[in-house]
Amino acid sequence: MEEFTQRQKKIGGILQQDLAEVLQKAATDGGLRGVIISVSKVNVTTDLSVAKVYLSIFPNKEAKPLLEGITSNKPLIRHELAQRTRHQLRRMPQLEFFIDDSLEYIDGIERSLKGEDNPLENPDLLGKRKKS
Image 1 (spheres, rainbow, N blue to C red):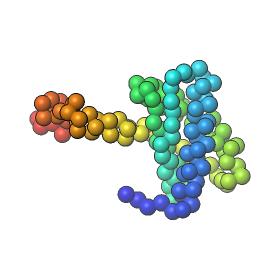
Image 2 (cartoon, one colour):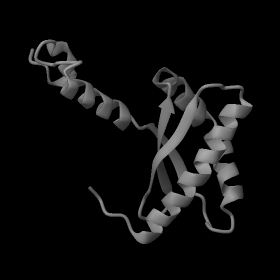
Image 3 (cartoon, rainbow, N blue to C red):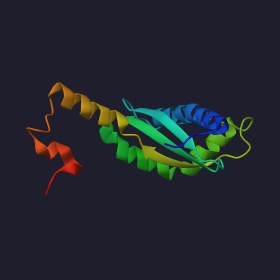
């Protein structure tokens, strides 16, 4: 796991907060109801040129189409962010969006621990690790 400088963390935090507001407002203005978009993490590269943005989208079935829509609107989102952060950042990093599936992963582990999804009884649950 890589260590981030204070500056990277600070910029990531600023971007995370503003991006969450921008995306939620865009979803609401676009007529999306019952969809929650949260920015779970923003990692900024050492040279501050790229920000990797991890999104949690609920319900999960909406994640892929929403990510495609967000990615296709990257220039508009970046411009909106630049307007909001113009007094804090000299240059706006390029944005790269990813789905954060850690909640889904944790939920799967919890179901396994509770015995709801037992991989010993149903080997198909193991997915990638299944023996051929």
